Image (cartoon, rainbow, N blue to C red):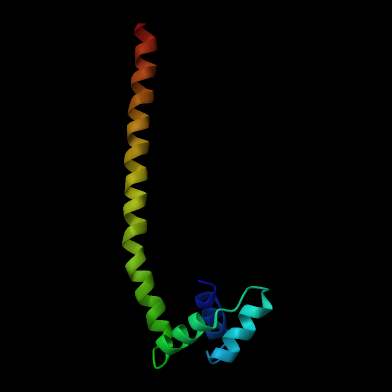
Length: 93
């Protein structure tokens, strides 16, 4: 995963993502450099528009975030109903 973060940092800085540049970024953090992962990532990104890949990832993960918020809202509504009924029962208890 650190390889992906390193590639994103290089992209954000306007630097070309190469094996050497990615190794430098990762080693500068004190992390272990996995040459196989770096080689595979650089190869996978070759010729790809990274901004489009980021956009696609955001679109894929956005529905999950919306679903999670809906689930939280349902739980909150259930808790409110329980609290309201508890309050009413104390009036007639």
